[in-house]
Image 1 (cartoon, rainbow, N blue to C red):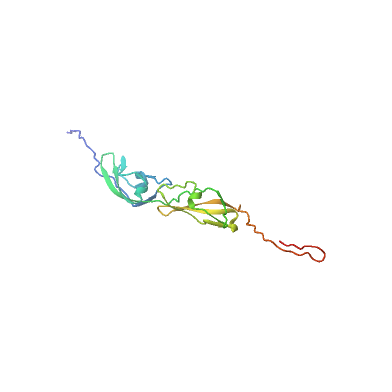
Image 2 (spheres, one colour):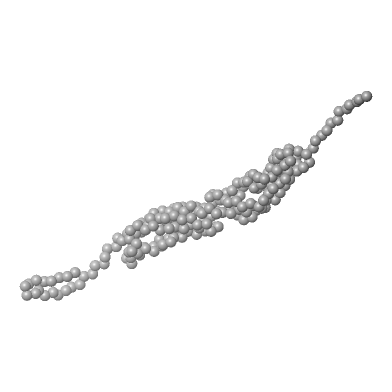
Length: 198
């Protein structure tokens, strides 16, 4: 004798994803921005079935986020099991600011000198997180510098990164000599010649 019945077997997945969130260091771009995804900082996370979704508590960063940031990453499988993790994200700004130079012409003064400052040849150097200092390697020029001189401009941002460019500083001497004359009494020689020298 035999009989049979039908049973409804419901398979459940109650195992949450395995979140792998290592400490990570990333860098701002030249504009001072950074955008990340879960794949950027937690690519090795997994689930016994599959990961259906993931999210980050913060994905966009700027200059004010330089340093260590504590983020929360959350992973969800198709059954709705969720697993959060903490990500320690260190953000650095290591890109040197793009220095922009302007060529210029200087004229020596009556004391045979000409001076220039960094803003005079800075052609609008910018940095995503701000410029701290702009300086010139050489600021004073003399007769020895008449002609074209290649001068380095250094642009340092607030994180200590330094960008450089070279400007052509053309030094010209347009001051006429100061000629001074004096009266002389000169006697002709026996042949009637008068010798003169400069």
